Amino acid sequence: MKRIAVILILVLLFSPAAFAEEPTASHADEFLTGLSQAWSGLVGMAEDARQSLADWADASGIKIWMEDTANSISAWAIDSGLTEWANTALSNVQSWADDSGLAEWASNISAQAQQYIEDNRPAVEAWLAQAGEEVNRAWNTLLSADTHTKDEVEAALKTVSSSFGQATGFKYVHDPRDNPEAMKDIVYNPDAVYGFSPSPDSTRLREYVDAIDWTNAEQVAQARAQRQAYLDSMSELYRLIENMLKEGNNVETIARAVSQRRNELRLEAYADDPKGLETVKKSNLETYGDEMGPSADSLFQKYGSWQTVLEKALGTNMGMDACLGFYDVLYDYYDIQ
Image (cartoon, rainbow, N blue to C red):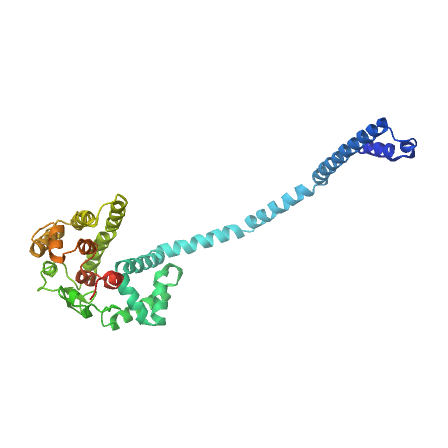
């Protein structure tokens, strides 16, 4: 009906009779009204056409056919056993990997390799830099062992183990032996995990000579993790300095506050290690005459500058850093003459 109405309106609008007389206000109104009606009719036709197409799709069955075709393909896969076969195959592979222990074994190898990196990052990085392309490929295979065959992983293990066996010991990029200040507290020890161990002649570190077995990777890794936590906590000192500067405090006030907090952080690092806490307090007492660590006044008396006192509060013992694998990491922060 809408289409018929539009045709009639168009015929009336554009018929010769419509323009037989001079245009008047009445004719103009009629023309605009007719045009408006014609436009509405066109819109209606578009809507009718869209609806008709949808009706045709339903009536012709094409919509149902498309849905049935998709369902038929799915049903065929199920009836033919293809879907079940695929699911069973995947399940069988997973079950075989689980039953044989391969999946767990490969995951464990990957986890162990990742943990070894975290515990011995400087040593691993230095070793890989010198190990050659074949060893690097084998190491990467271990890191992603669960994506490789057991034969590939075992071959990689053999390559990596062989490379470890050929190693002459860990080597720093910056040799601590070139630093007299560091060597006051440590001795070169090629059997030690990081090539150095505390010196029995050191006032500062002699208490640590027998604190752990410096040739035992597991014990050194635990000590390294403890020191890493201490180093991480020192970021608090930089925030303290920043806040005190904003408040307008002078260097002496800041140096005193930072020195005290640094000593507290050092002891807090041994909160879960009573034996270690006893060792560090004894070392502090023998070195500084105070089990809490060096006081700001004693440091000022030694260096004669509050700026230096502040810098020393932010420093670390280079010898202990060398024993625990941090020497290269922190090298740029050392004040080496």
